[in-house]
Length: 125
Image 1: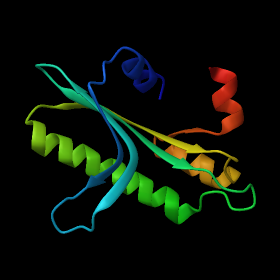
Image 2 (image 1 turned 135 degrees about the horizontal axis):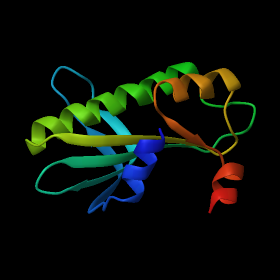
Image 3 (image 1 turned 45 degrees about the horizontal axis):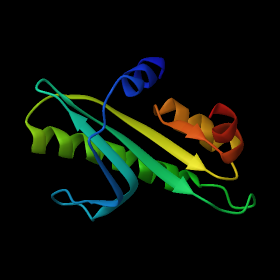
Image 4 (image 1 turned 90 degrees about the horizontal axis):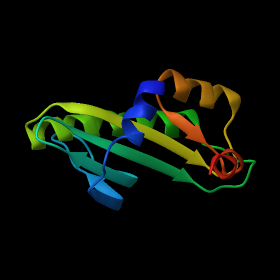
């Protein structure tokens, strides 16, 4: 994850969308809360955010976490097909305002997804 953070901090993102709809063949339309893309002559990259602002009693479920990982795979596939150049990285970030169940957050980290809640987000900025 450290390399991905370094790549993100050194990359320029030229296009940003909110509520970005991703449509791939033989799948239902998937919506990404925020998608930022960039590219140069050699490769392309993206930063994808999932945002949940819920009561602490209802943190993101495993099913929601799995769906976000599916969206990230779709973004990688879409970039590779549409750009015709290698995908350097897709950095996934899941922001849950009130946090995560420990097992869900651990699972997301195992999948390479960065996580944050309001408390950690505000303390790092």
